[in-house]
Length: 209
Image (cartoon, rainbow, N blue to C red; front, side, top):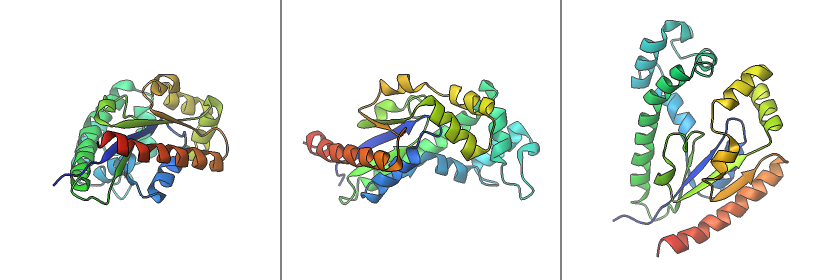
């Protein structure tokens, strides 16, 4: 027997603080699906995605242990839209398949009420309509650039190129049911996420009738 499961997309640009918000939801009892983490698992040596990626990009993107060097691959795909589209065409369908499989499993378990998919490219991939609610995480462009430079150890130019490769915040906000601004302190982000969680609980009541 299937039970009602509120499906929520948690999205936003690169280095905007999605992971902080998702951890809050996870700590509150939501089941969180980390799309980026799933993509990494699919790209492990000899996995289907790994084989296609190495065949396409060549062995120069590999470390000595045959794992994909994400830094090398990132420099390629973030500077060439055609290559980025290819990588997404390989990983997105496989990640989406895992997401749908987990949702089906959770619907069998009445203890799970909220499923959250944390993925940067939910809207760009045309998946927005597959969710009951959408949360968009954002921050000021300056903060986003600074965070990305620090996180990935890249130049300001590289950071700006990666940010520009994704849909602008203002466009993503048009799809949002809820917004979380991470420009401030971590405690401010946590507070906003907890507030959104309370709204999601109310959404369960209204949508499950």
